Length: 356
Image 1 (cartoon, helix red, strand yellow):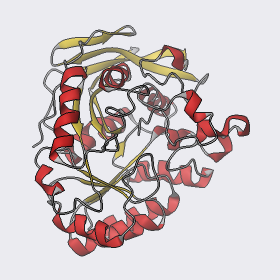
Image 2 (cartoon, rainbow, N blue to C red):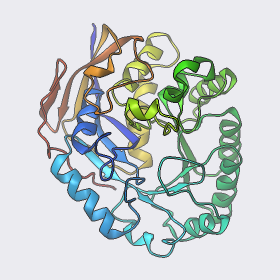
Image 3 (cartoon, rainbow, N blue to C red):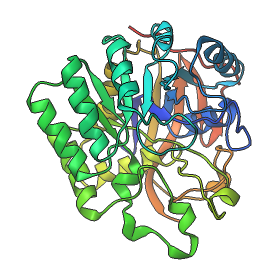
């Protein structure tokens, strides 16, 4: 049978650019892209403009989402050098606190160890704390989490050294979780086209074949908990500029790439569901979405042509690649919101996610 029903996918790491850069994406186009990709819930990062760092900005972004979102959604708060004492007031409202410890898009990078330590100390341990922590910063985060005896989630792990550190920390009892992206699982630095190099700028960067092999081994070993797209749309004009911003769109290709891995025997369908539904729901304490599911056509072959995608940015790093398997239908709370390539869900149909 070519059709298979799966639970609605959860993407714990998306950038929807609303407010501040809605010409790249907004809550309407971004959640339409999510539904088309099989995601019925997305958790949005705080590096908007302005960033989500206090209650007023949180209420502003939630107002925009309430008006436009087509699937269910959550929002993270961002940690800054000036809000260590105040941001915890949002802990019961947001999906978690995000700390940026390496270069990324926006102005939320934390440079001082004292600020990282302060956020670790005051953010409630029963609420998710996420870190963009590459290389040595991953070791810093794990050390501080161990000192504070708290959980931590490492975003978009991309290097063998990071996987090895996380594995060692878990073996010593630290409640650390992590995610990897489809683009790091299916692309390496060998795929970079020097003619359009800016289109391959992403944070973390594309790494070596050895790093990619370690990510797949981490999935097989149970070290990797989630697949997160890190959907980060920018226009092609921006990507082809002299100073290309980091990031790829990914919501409409993520599942199809992973279905190809199932077809190729790299993981089972049960493990895919764990990585893209069960574990994100557990880690981010999300209440179940009743009567919510997706139907995938395992046999359909298609070619990536991002000009036809719902994402506003209109391009993909996987442009022209032939994929095998796609979303056929999506039901959100008993209502069909996607069918045969058409998004049917109305703007504002999404709900802010309840957390357990």
